[in-house]
Image (cartoon, rainbow, N blue to C red; front, top):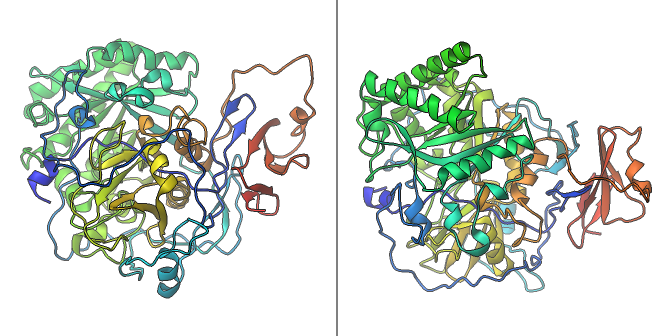
Length: 615
């Protein structure tokens, strides 16, 4: 990837569209997210509440400079508010050498129909991995009826395996145990407040019980090595975010520090001397306590890249170790809880090797956010998925490692404890402009599709923008990578939905990761206005899939008329139960409390599989 291509990238923003079969969850007094996902048949999605038109005429090439940390509120595109815009440096072709450290062994295969136990019994179907011939037939279909599926050129379909962590189970229903995956870290951005209309997002839109941690992006570093806000109202928004801890005292908040100043990372000057680092660390401790944050999240993209000298790899290690020592001393001296330390880090192995001394820094972090997205985008000459779980048959050379399985395997092979690694879940998709009749994975492309009406940056669409696109688009599933894509006219979109989230949760659980991090909250359908699936459909689905119990509700139960269903779960074990009075709903029992869930329109609950499926 050229520097010019890297320079054009917009901010990381989110999407993933829902598919039919996602059970919309409604708990007592509070809407929840999807619980179970039958594999959808070919069918059109139900229309969302809003209608957005996506034009198919080629846009003007997007070559605007990026990375401005400050801006005028009147700026329109999300690009003007991109603190970390460019994808990881992507080396040229050539065979990728195997790491010196051996990769961890694969986990045991899941047997057909095996069921496990988890806190709320969210049984999740896994995907099949048929023969190449069968896969070719599957991937040449769409979800539209009644017309027969069109024939498209989807490229090679053979599944490749180069070891790593690959473990693709047979078709089965699984219950995912919580295990070590006890963190659901959600990141929000301070530039989302400038999106128009229903796209505007502030901390007031946050459900305080949705995530275990919320990270506020973004603050930066000035010329005298002090942390400073970026937006004029940042301090007001800090207060709004941290007031949520009055509602949920268990919630932890962190502040991301990063971005660029005139296209250069402020980390470069700050880490250059021990004196500069000491000034920054003192500033960080004072700033975090003054604004009631529980920790700091480092976002330097990346040491040894983008103007950062090679020696910054070692200086980043010094910064991390010195931060932890200072946090420990602050906690002891002031008799308060130690501040948390986390970081957003690269996913592509070549970038990791050049940027981090993994074995030295990993022990010092409370958790590490692997940015397992932006593997492919409109800077590529052919279509590729934003966040694939595995490699594909169209990958070659270094791109064989542009996937989640390879990225996490590499971090672990370098000495990172798996329980400290958080898998990145994007709530956005990346778009391409098709340049030929082919429209599958690896199809020729030339730049991005048009910008979305809310994110207003060519190259990616937020989840709530994707929901409207997928309503009329042809939908497909990339079986070998376990992710969806959609096409309409010359627009091609690789995104995440509830089904791919389920696959990734199964993967992170099998590999004992510490949890998930989401980029970003403001790219999910946070208001529930677009996707007909309630507020935060992707993150709510992720939360339930990871085995977290139902969220508390502040809605008081009525005292005058008793609902007989309210006592359904009294004395029953935790789990899912049919509602014999209404097959379109079912009960979830958790710690003696009863929660009523609704299947997606057209589906009914089947107790035999503990799932919503077609009648």
